[in-house]
Length: 226
Ligand code: ATP
Image: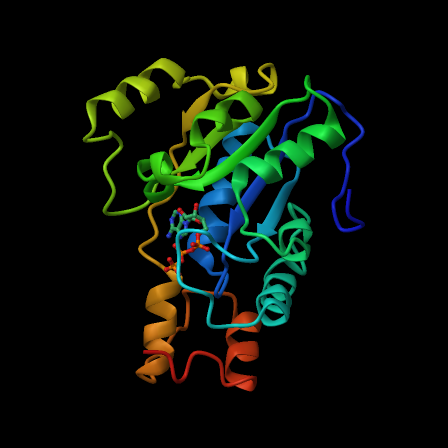
């Protein structure tokens, strides 16, 4: 357990994790997860910035800069905290390994939830050891514009149907094995678009917290990305 991870006293409460590159963190991350937290009754969401994302090009901002931006984004928001275990590992940030490390910490019975966007759900079969993920946690999925709520691969759609639950109340009683597609606001925002907008000197107002935008401008981030 890192110092930054806040523990709740109630052992039945859901331990919720939200992984990402956060290059940079934006309202498309924060607002759907806040809505999800209300729907499911999450008291705390632990943000897990990646160190080396296995399926993606390396982040533009350094680890320290991404972390600094996350801290600014959640400064006055008690829902969120940060866990830096993936940043400290020198190996790729495989979700299954992170979940195992949380399981070692909290035991097998406590509900553990991993939050992802709909785009991530649709590509989950490309993740390292993805078949083990639901043995370790429930998946809480935020809607994302432009992505279907179903898989085009029949076997994956079967997998979703087999695990999908429709009542959020179930999630605080199940340690793992469920997928919940939440009814969250659709925000057409991506970190890619923010990096492109900064490169093209376009405004990023209203798509990420003002303190994060000030940090980006102060440190001249994303000005030269291709
Ligand atoms: P990039 O554009 O660099 O690929 P991103 O904006 O998709 O980044 P990530 O840090 O890769 O952000 O995403 C972390 C998690 O947040 C993923 O599970 C992703 O699906 C989810 N997510 C990101 N943006 C949104 C959004 N606008 N709506 C819903 N979920 C989102």
